[in-house]
Amino acid sequence: MPQPGARRKGVRAGRRRPQGGVRPILGIASCILLLTQQSGTVWLFGAGLLVVGVALFFATRWLRSRAGEPVQGVIRRG
Image (cartoon, rainbow, N blue to C red; front, side, top):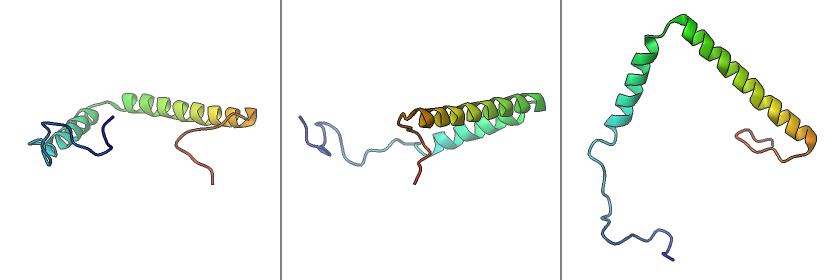
């Protein structure tokens, strides 16, 4: 088994992709451009789905905590 952090044969150190920083910016820009062309109805429908999803998320967490199951996720209690 290889050592953690060990390099593989034939892989040069410090190798980077030529336009690594440009692609994410172009992707975000294209998403924003497409989103600005949507009607208000589409935005309201998306917001409604988001609200339903968040409500289901918290309802599931609450039900699991009442049942004594371990609750895992992004939100951590101190």
